[in-house]
Image (tube, rainbow, N blue to C red; front, top):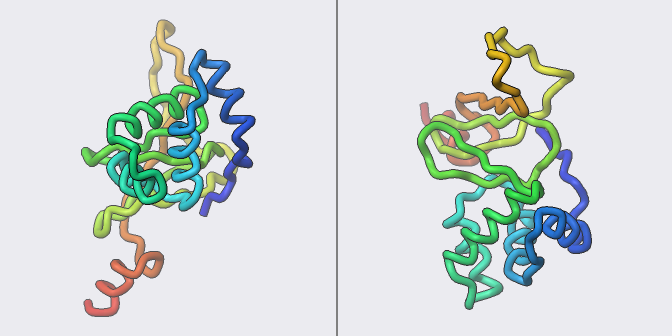
Length: 153
């Protein structure tokens, strides 16, 4: 699994925010720390519930605004799998995502070398900047929910 997370530091977050013309706030720092603490792929609502545990005064709007700022300054990425809620990933290294069709959890997967990309006829007026790779299947043995289903079946 991918584990290439950049080192977390308040100073580098402040620099990245400043580069995008955004202010550093204690709320943005707190939301960033919440994301770094578990290294999973929470939704905004899950980030809000986690942030509220140690900062009860934080609002949902503040969490949404903080996540937006963290994405804009490039320290967090949005992950969209299927039509579910947007998830947030603090792993900024190159990696793919594996989405379990049964439990809905999303896991980071290492990329070995450059992945083979299907030939796509991209007209000259378009510039490809990134490619998102999402794998779908079942996480048998990885999580207790799917592992139990496998044992019962």
